Each structure stands twice: as C-alpha cells, then as structure tokens.
Image (cartoon, rainbow, N blue to C red):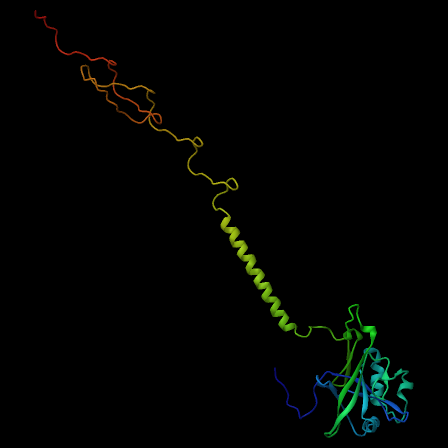
Length: 293
C-alpha cells in the first residue's frame, strides 16, 4: 500500500475534544475548546494544553496560572464546537449554552457541571513554541460524575459517550475492541486452552489402550477363535473303538503278552485293534501224539 509524502503537520488523531474553563479572578469566566491536550506524566500527575496567544482565554490562564479540563460527551457536542468558534469577548458561554458552573476544590476557575470528568490544573511552566504556547500543569484533583459509578464503585467512563476530534470532525460512541493488556491475556488464555487440550488427548489415549480391538464380541470378554465345537471341552479324533477293554491280537498260540495298538480313541483311554482271538487263553499248536508211559 503506497503512502503520499506530505509536508510537516499534525496528524495525530483522534484527540480528546475538551472544554477548558478559566477565570480572570475578577468575575469573568470563560470556556475554550482545546484539542491539543493530553497527559504529560503519571507520577506526579501532569497534563498540558496548548493555546494560541491570540485567544481570549490565553491571558486569563497567564494571569491566574489555573484552569480546569472538562471532558466532553456526545450530548455536549454542540457546546463543544460553539466554545471553539465563538469568542468569550463577545458572549457569556456559560449563560448562552445554559451550562452549570461548579466551584472547584483548589483552583479559582469553575468546573462545568455537565462534564463527566473535571480536572483541576495549576500551571508549572509555559513553553512558547510557535503558533501555540504549551501550558504544562500539575493535576491537583479529579472530579468524577457519580452517575457513571457501578455497583462495585467502579467508574465506567466509557458509558458516558466520550467525544473526540479527528481531522476536523467530532466523533462519539467508539466501539470496544479490547481492554488494556488484552493481547497478553489472550496468549495466556490460549496456553491454558492448549494445556486443557493436551490433557484431554492424553485421557483419550489411555481410554484407547484399554479398548480391545477385533471383531465384535461380548463386551469386556475375550473372544475365542476357531471352528465351532463343544464349548470348553476338547474334541477327540479317530475312529470309534471299544471303550474300557483291552483287545488281544495275533494268531493262535502266541504268548500271553497283550499287544496294544491302533489309533487314538476316546480321550484318556487306550483303544486296542486287530483281529479277534481267544481272550485270555493260550492255544496249543501241533498234532496230537500218544502218551508214553
């Protein structure tokens, strides 16, 4: 994005458009609208206003060394502009605008009752700079309208609809886009969210480990695999044989020994195989002869 080059000038906007109330100490009070104003120091509290020496109020400030900065609101926009374009030499602005004079605590200049904030100032130094002279002043007191105090006694100044000046225009009703320090708070909150997310991921991982994988079975139990058989029992294989008895084998005349052979039968028992012979007896072989005496 390109920028044009201009000659030196003031483009620091927006600025507060304040009404500065002054007095000459002889019964003549006035109001001048000032945009060249701001904070100089926090401790000690200091503020400044810059005023053209040609202004009616300039000599009053020079004489008394005192003034009051009154913040303005949208409701005071007309009065703010009027006090900036009409001279106190020609008109009593308090009377013309029906503004309320309130006695200040430490300075002789009056405060404006309709302003949400009035700041009493005493001049410390005058700097003659050129078109404007700068009045550096100590802040002696701040008066805040109780109408903008909440139930917790917190001053809600932004509810007043403060008025600002920007490049020849008055603006009010600024939209809130953040609070002081929110950029840091946002990062801290993000860190908390990240930690929370990490904890949730860790818990999810632990839960996944406890979960068994595979095809659906009965919840919480191990699934057995294989072909269907009788549950919990061993399956026996082989051909049926005679249960519980030993079968002798061999041809007639063999010895008393029993031959156990064959394929497995019922579980835990032996199966005998072979052809049938005489059970438990021995067979004599050969031809019969005569008995010798």
